[in-house]
Image (cartoon, rainbow, N blue to C red; front, side):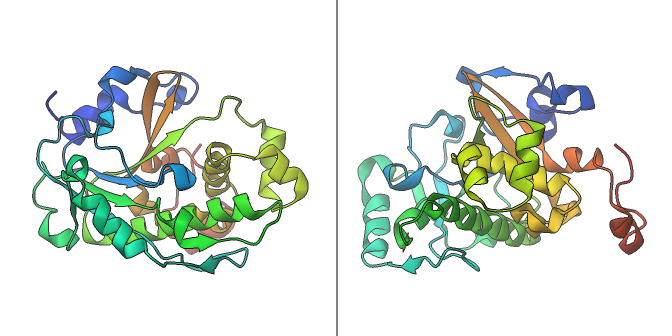
Length: 272
């Protein structure tokens, strides 16, 4: 399967119209892939899924070695995690030395590969689940997610400063979408009720996007990226064998800026 350029790819898979928010252009999972010149931010799912599978269909079409970097340090972590990096460097080395993983090459510098659109770049955040341990509490899973998520958006902002390549984060939609009232509870901060309602990485990811769209945007991890950088960011949502792409720049263009934001920047989005 050949790789499309981003504009063509987004015309087929992307949420381009406001009406698409309720009826997105769903694509069959057997056609799952990225466009040429993409950057994939891979988060994994805990210690059972810390690294990409080389047979993942999302890599379809990329025939050259895939450049990969591993993010193993948190930025401004919450929840008092303890850093336990012992043996991680060797584990990463062994991962790349394994025969089936040799298509993943260690990324030496982003500048060395950004001109080659047929080389996919992957940033892996999965090892953060092993690099840190959290005190036992009902909030430990929440802090593990929020810290990894913050590392993702902080690193993505730095990557976009170097390259305007389209950035992708694959997101699984929760089986049951949170209601507006539940989103309101989530916006108010960490509590036992909030933890019970948002008990998965899928629902917590939606909450971060929701906060970024709201009046208190700065409280979302997505605030690490600027409005201009958002144009390069794509969330690839997967559910029930189908998928679609949501570009944050397009989404942001439908957001109504607050009075404070308009005072700071009269060009800030003021439409719905």
